[in-house]
Length: 334
View 1 (cartoon, rainbow, N blue to C red):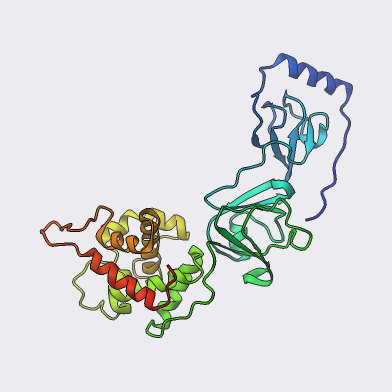
View 2 (view 1 turned 135 degrees about the vertical axis):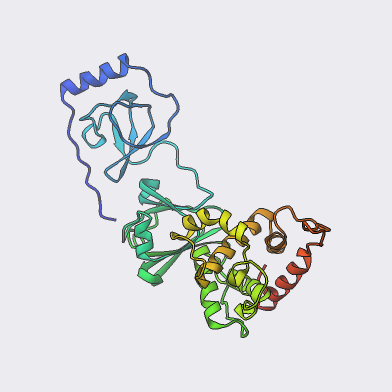
């Protein structure tokens, strides 16, 4: 990270007087210190509040109500460069990257997935950036020196208030996943190459290290025989993973948010993406892969002995047994 110079401009006697008056004759600011986001004029700040300004973090030295012209670099009597208040808590929904050391400056939180430079840029992270980061418990971050996961790789499994000179401002691509990556995932011999490409694309998006690709392959085998069982199928389900229309429609907005595009009913890749997104939700909601499969097939309200509107038993347990056995036969780890 390029060293940022400290701009020191002593306050004039007039400004000192204004600070005094502001401190004593305006409504008192909040007593508890907090991260207040970007600095703004006409705002009450308490001692140890932190703000960001021009990419750096500043800590409030004395309570005051800000005015235009009292920007942190111009008011050393009011602000000290660097974080000095409450350390930001570690997020649980993603990894947070910071522009400066000690969790200072611009912050961007990113969820699981593999991110090339262009994808990081789209998240607001420029090239060769990042001096500290917050990592949720059980998550792993792989930082790469070059785009497309090339060059030197550095791995983080916990918070780091300073990544070190060797890593500082050298991040060009990132992989983020929960747990440890599968050591090496091999395409099962019966899975067609194009299906494997679809499921690995999704696995990379979810940051699962290959294991999710094995599970999705097992689901596609059961649902559509890798696409061979679709012609003449009486089901109204959608393509490779047979997501029913009502379910599909309920997830269209979530699909667009997750994948950054509208769902294409005719795209086999989108069919896999849609089914994978729903299946992942069920796994998280119901605690494990097997239970996720039960409710992917039987619905959220499925229970042993459940029947459909015609009184026919919903045999989600048989479905889960078959898919889970295939997944484990492929080398599934969970």
